[in-house]
Length: 99
Image 1 (cartoon, rainbow, N blue to C red):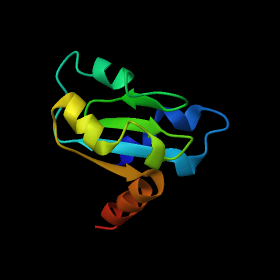
Image 2 (cartoon, rainbow, N blue to C red):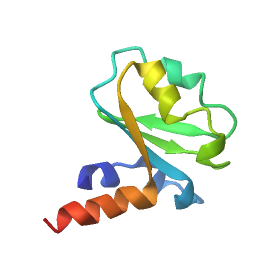
Image 3 (cartoon, rainbow, N blue to C red):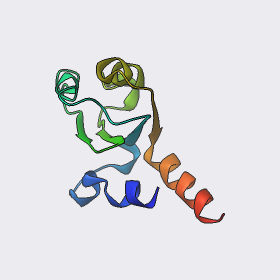
Image 4 (tube, rainbow, N blue to C red):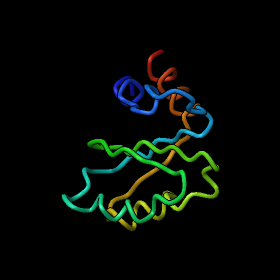
């Protein structure tokens, strides 16, 4: 979890609203070439950065309005996934750090 948080590329950008950040955790590495399918879903101001087992999302209009939903990502990449907002991701890290 420490690496997931540290590697979020959006944290290096000015003006990012942390409440609009999300991380989609993938059950496995997506197949080569499947990330291009996500490009068609990233409309408007929505952006994403793929990593090995996660996808970092920035949805300035809100996660409820993005086409980069968890279901859409699972379908596009043919993997199981779960998406968490940035606050929850950090809370999960704090919880596992105390173990």
